Length: 128
Image (cartoon, one colour):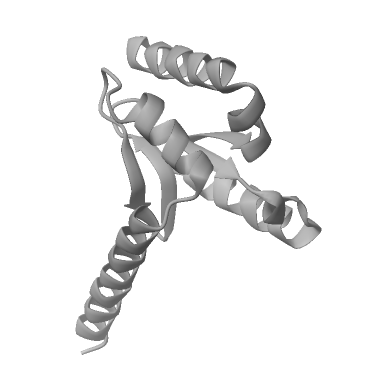
């Protein structure tokens, strides 16, 4: 009986995360939209946005490279949020997923460099 309840709880959690990911796609930030529509959507290697992986929703995820791309707004620079982000990154790393983080200001001021860094890392990881 316990195993059945655990399975049901996991399925419910996945359903809730999937619904939240859909909501986040519909209500993306301007920086997420810029990176998506001006670079990642038509990138030569598939990249997905607001992808559920384990207990987390990743801003962007390339499954072929096992690479998450996260855009951090101002809220990510508080001590509590930094600890949460570090724990999240450590857990994803333990599952073989590398995390690249960029701040929204990078999207505004260094867009070409952000895209180049992402492109380079995806291609390096696929070759490895």
